[in-house]
Amino acid sequence: MPASARRPFKRPRHVPATDYEVVIVGAGAAGLSAALVLGRCRRRVLLCDGGRTRNYPSPAVHGFLSRDGIKPQELLRIGHEQLQPYPTVEQRENCVTTASRDPLTGTFTLTLDSGREVTSRKIILATGVMDILPTIDGMHELWGTGVLHCPYCHGYEVSDQPVAVYGCDKSVAGFALLISRWSKDVAVCTDGWTKMTDHARHRLQRHGIALYEQPITKLVGYANKTLRHIEFQDGSTLPRKALFIHPQQKQRSDLAIQLGCRILQRNGSVAVDKRILTTVPGVYAAGDTTPAAQQALVAAAEGAQAAISCNEQLTREECA
Ligand SMILES: Cc1cc2nc3c(=O)[nH]c(=O)nc-3n(C[C@H](O)[C@H](O)[C@H](O)COP(=O)(O)OP(=O)(O)OC[C@H]3O[C@@H](n4cnc5c(N)ncnc54)[C@H](O)[C@@H]3O)c2cc1C
Image 1 (tube, helix red, strand yellow):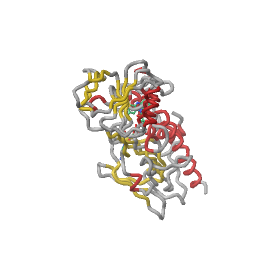
Image 2 (tube, protein in one colour; image 1 turned 90 degrees about the horizontal axis):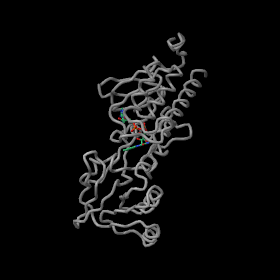
Image 3 (cartoon, rainbow, N blue to C red; image 1 turned 30 degrees about the vertical axis):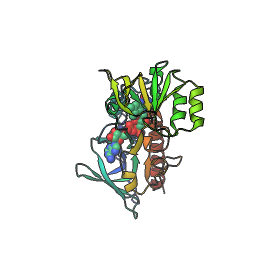
Image 4 (tube, rainbow, N blue to C red; image 1 turned 180 degrees about the vertical axis):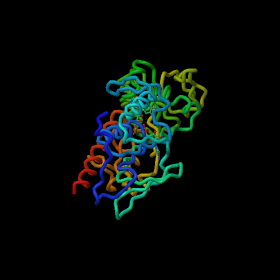
């Protein structure tokens, strides 16, 4: 490490004194990437994570340049390890429970679940989202292995296999047609929802996609948590290798709401501009928490962008 990296940051007098320059909440792909960029800017950073990343149940991360197929926990391990050379980045296994902004100084006070209070000049929210699965027996147990959410992440692994698409709203037909690029044997299961339009039914039929409208009672898997078959209320079963679903989601944390950030009505994500800045000055948001495509690589890219925007804004304030 160059000796200069250890030099303590000299705060200009007009810059408010805080414990950290940036607090990053969440250490998934977005938060780790932001911490790496800010560590290399020699910024005093606190990186807090109080739980598990969204893809925790999945056996592999796919489509991540140079890391295709890596276990999610291994990707995180490498991410944490590569922060070690940067002494200005402090990592804590803590949940951040509250955050507020002082309108006079523009600085932030955050409370950790340990009870510790910290102050910061900027915040990056990289807190991710939570998937809300339908309450069907077997759905939770098979999530990430036999029940999949994204063909870009896992479609290749079930190429040309019999698969199903779950959905009880009008988006299910489009989702099934997308999945049909990976397999010709696709079935749509609406779990009792019968209001599909004639147009959607014809489209499915035209592309050889079968429609099962009866309620599902359970998903039956193998010991390795891949899907064996779908069982319906009428007693029939449908053998499938995987079930694709677009679950409902909610934000993992309400910190953006606490801070007064604008939340998009259509999907509950945190609104950001092209610099990844939210509508509240000094609060950045990156990764699944924003409206961008929910992919680990995109989250990492947004984290890097948030860090660059943050560093440039800090610099502007210091050099005013
Ligand atoms: C089953 C599954 C499989 C997937 N497979 C792939 C794949 O193969 N390829 C791919 O590109 N993408 C995949 N994804 C999507 C990928 O997981 C997400 O895009 C990625 O994890 C987003 O990264 P993130 O950093 O925004 O959020 P996350 O990875 O979810 O990280 C957010 C972190 O913030 C922490 N946190 C939340 N609130 C707080 C708080 N208040 N205080 C402290 N910490 C907090 C959480 O504990 C979590 O660790 C998959 C998703 C799922 C559900």
